[in-house]
Figure 1 (cartoon, helix red, strand yellow):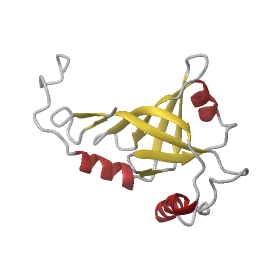
Figure 2 (cartoon, rainbow, N blue to C red):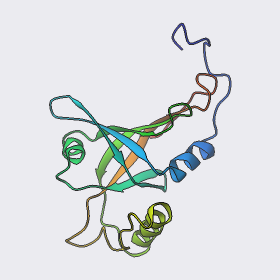
Figure 3 (cartoon, rainbow, N blue to C red):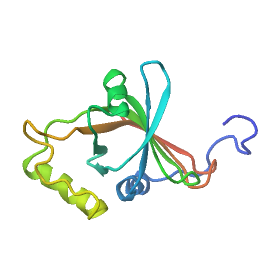
Figure 4 (spheres, rainbow, N blue to C red):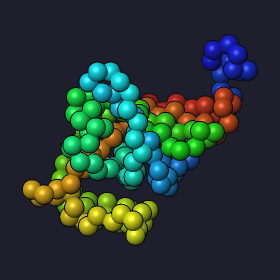
Length: 156
C-alpha cells in the first residue's frame, strides 16, 4: 500500500463467495470503456452474474459497445463506493443463448428486473438476437472496509 493509507497491507481478506454474491445480487452496475480516442466512457448497465461472468445486452450502435468492439478491456463497478467491488476484464460478443442457457438467462433477468425488463428466453438466439455480451473477469478488487480487507482475485 502507498504511504498515507494507514496500513502496509490488508490484514483480513474477503472470501470469493461473499464477493460473488454481491455481483449476483446487484441491480445496477457501472461499465467503463475506453473510446478510440482514448477518452473514458462510463455507462450504467443492467445485467446478470452467472457462471463466473457478467452477461448483459446492448445495441451494437451504443457508444460503449462500439468502444468494446475496438478495445474489449473494461471495468465493471458496483454502485457502493464504501464496500467496493470492481471487476477488470474483457467484454466480447456472446454466443447465441438458447435452450436451457437462454432460459437460465431469462429467469435471472426476470428475477432481478421484472416488470421493467424481461427479455424472453430466446431473446439472444437466431438472426434477430439482441446484442448479448459477456464480460469475463481477469481480476476483481473488493473491500468492505478499506484498506483493512482489500482483496484481489485473479483469474486466468
